[in-house]
Figure 1 (spheres, rainbow, N blue to C red):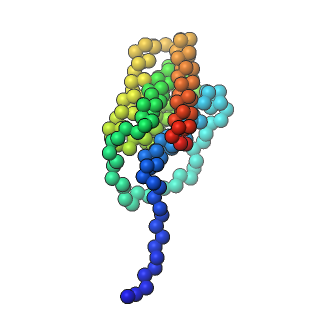
Figure 2: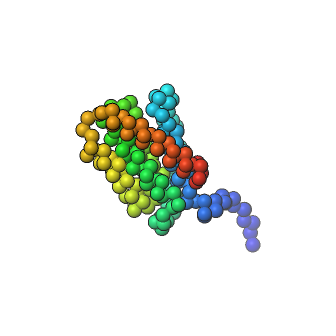
Length: 166
């Protein structure tokens, strides 16, 4: 028998918390972004120039499409983001282009399976279309609806972060 060096293996997190990791990432991304538009205008985040390349030696098998306990709130969040994407664009606010990007980040973080990505995109599209059918021009009511959606999105993101991590 020859000498064999010991290999260090990284320990995996407990399986029961693994399914909340994407939510924690999504909440961490969305919580600061759903703060009032004035705060956003004052604190624009610049993308980092150094993005670490992702190594994907082995891709883990896709998990079963089991609804997470926070799915209802997450789908409502996607719907709110869709509504805001339409309303903020209609009223030509400075952050109008950021809402579709936020939804893309949410889908990347939470869209573990194709079915889940479809549900998230469907909720976003439902929110977007519901206001596209109603509003053709920016009105005071459109501003009020956007303000209410901002408040609801902030409440949802804080609730998700408080209950499920982030």
